[in-house]
Every structure is written in structure tokens, then in C-alpha cells.
Length: 251
Image (tube, rainbow, N blue to C red):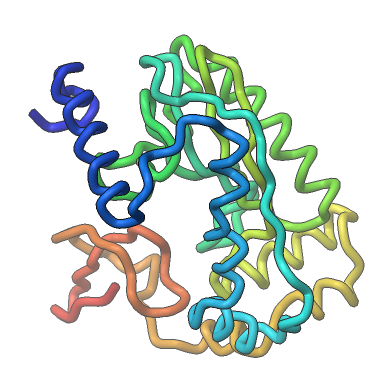
């Protein structure tokens, strides 16, 4: 069995009962069945503002500690209702190169963290263009363009679709590599979305530093020997390991 969703229903029920037992053992309370007390009692989202990781992130990016945080409570939609349902993450531009193309990852018959949990390998959202989910892709494309023009910045969009209907979970400013930051800023000026002054302010010095890191010439003849995730700045996400004529390798 290759996918978690292929588990028989009885096995899934048994797994749910096991998880409930673990929660009760750890908290001393049974798994809540009534929504409002469960939401009011769960303060993990608010408490995450004070974690070491969050504090360090704010320090690096110059974000004040006294801004505070918030939690949105919304009705649930289900991406695991069959092959006409799913979930994913979309970017209005390529966050590695800055190219103005809708891209990202998605999974059908999946929910929430399934895309990044590693349980299954996500697929490019371009796959939605074909077949019965083409309507979902067209709607996502339309909304993504509208959001980018409204916020005048590259957007990172989380979405779910249930029985062919698209739902947006959230949108935020997309993190991007140095090359992408420069290219997207320049092209947004050309498109009239931002001014040249805003473009300069959007590219922090550390992003410019990435452009000077050694890298394999993308135009060099190479032989693909493996695929993986890059660890160095400025390279393309999920890029291949390249071997050039000189025999050396690079991310």
C-alpha cells in the first residue's frame, strides 16, 4: 500500500480511536466533541507568537514584538472527499526565478498538511489544467491574479477544493529567492503595479548577496544524475544535481 488514503475504513477508524486515546492520556481530558469549548480552549495558535522560532524570525526581519497575533476560526471544507477534491499551495510567480507564472503543489483527495507532510509526493498545480478539474484551475488562476494586483506583491496562497468547488484558506506575501525578488520587482514596475522606489525598497541587501553566490551556469550542457531540494541560497527549488563538462557538481 503506497498511500495513506488507501487504508481500509476499519483501519482508519481504529487509528482515529488510537489518536483520541493518546490525546486523553497526554491531557487528562477526552477528545472534545463540542466545537465552541474546543476552540476556546485551544490557545496554541496564540501561544505560537512567543516560541523561540517566532521571536528569532521577528528579530531577523525587524518585526516588533508588540504587534500581537490573531487566530481566524472558519467553517471547515474537506479536500479528502474523493478525486474531485484536494488541497494545495500556489504562488502567483515563481519564487525561485521570479517568472510571472502561476505555480505550486497540490494533492487530490488530501487535506491540510498532507501537501508538506511527506506522506505522499505532491504534484504541480498545472496538472489541474487537464480533465475534470480544469474549472478549479481557471478559478484559481483568476483569483491569484486578482489577489496579486490588490496587494501589489507576489502571493503565497493556500487553497482547498471540495467536489470541484474552490475555497481559499489564506493568502500572504510570498517568500522568494534573491533572483526572484529582483526580477519580480523589476517586472512589477514594468506592469505598473509598483513604483521604481517601491521596487528598490522591496529587495533587501541579503537578497542581492544571494546573486553573487557561485552557481552552475544554467545554460551549460549538463547530465541530470539526481533530484533533490537545494540547501544553498539562490538556486531553484527541487532543482536537479548538475554535472558539467568539467566533472564538478552543483545544487
